[in-house]
Amino acid sequence: MKIAVAGTGYVGLVTGVCLASKGHGVTCVDVDEQKVEVMKQGVSPIYEPGLSELMKESMDHLTFTTDYESAYKDADVIFIGVGTPEKVDGSANLAFVYQVAKQIAASVQKDCVVVIKSTVPIGTNDKIESYIHDKQKHNVSVYVASNPEFLSQGTAVKDTLHASRIVIGADEEKPAEILKKVYQDFDAPKLVVGRRSAEMIKYASNDFLALKISYVNEIANLCETVGADVEEVTMGMGYDSRIGDRFLNAGIGYGGSCFPKDTKALSWLASFNDNEIRTIKAAIEVNDSQKFKLVKKARKYYDDFLFLNIAILGCTFKPGTDDLREAPSLVNVPLLLEDGAYLRIWDPVGQDNFKKQIQNKNIQYFDTIEEAIDGADLCLIFTEWDDVVKFDITKYEELMKTPIVLDGRNCYPLSAFEGTKTTYCSIGRKTVNDR
Ligand code: UGA
Image 1: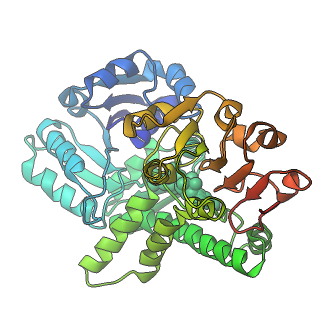
Image 2: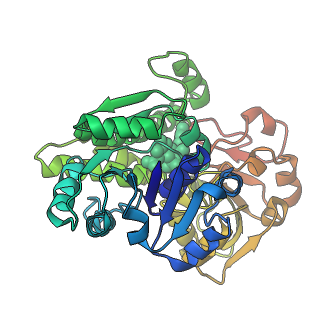
């Protein structure tokens, strides 16, 4: 099938590459000429495990262009995978989606299905369909279908090729049949539902996961007060298949481009329709304060951070990505700098992006964890990178001036620090070697 994909961010590019790997002829469209030139060379502009390799293997079926007209005019299916960022009031900004819809309306010369993959408020598919029908230049049949994305950054290729489910939101049989054909070689359950339900499945799924994390973070905070251990608690909970054992990792809150945005968007949508979605509002509130948990804990050890050398391990919102959006590091680093601390930052792939966001003469970057913690008065772990998890913990004591490790991602078993001189304080668990 001849497929066009609008937008080459995480969703668009991964979708395009995975569809091409199944033999479809895919043209990826982006407005950024520089990015398109890079992709034409078979190079992925984003860091995503497995993506570069699959892209290289599938180059025979992939075209990259800024010329949307040539990509859309005779496509059988056009995926829209552009961003829907958060507006100041928390609602979703649909400007990019409408811009693509306008280009589609001006370009299509053949019957086609426009598939909205971007996360959009419930009812958007209906509006986009009317918009295209109103504006289309040629008299052809354009159907609009919803096909929400469930990939996670860091495992995006695997999540797309081996999806938990493929949701097809279509109000007519024809677009549903065409989408089933597009995905015929994908080994995943395919669910055909109404368009509004498909749009809601996306928000309800993401917000449920965010809620689960905020819930477990509150349980963790309480565990600290009452002397329970959150890892033991979640292990006990996880055996119950009704609860499940995933997404129960306590920490310093969720970040990324999805949970923070999608919780606020659903909450906005609910109140706009005179409905309050109180559980999600609570999840947002809990997450906002959880992000500051480590710095709050640090104040127990130091009255202020003036002239302290603080090692920061990890700045991305999670491992396996160079993405910093809504990462806890972004709100904590300015706080520490304001207090006069010297920061020694290590992150295996996020450093360049971090440098673009926060410039300060009191920040130094290091290539190894050893260098970052050398002589430090305090070490804060914001991301559970494998290098951190597998790090020889005796080095904290050996290299730091004062070995105090505050771990926002529970990277180590408590037993690892027993018998050492390192103070190890994590989330929802007792502090080892407290001082
Ligand atoms: C999320 C969803 O997991 C995907 O299913 C969805 O498709 C995607 O959003 C999207 O809407 O595009 P993603 O944001 O890439 O994926 O990352 P997650 O792995 O879900 O992690 C999000 C945040 O939650 C991270 O900051 C992570 O550290 C945190 N988290 C996750 C926890 O604090 N505890 C957990 O147990 C799991």
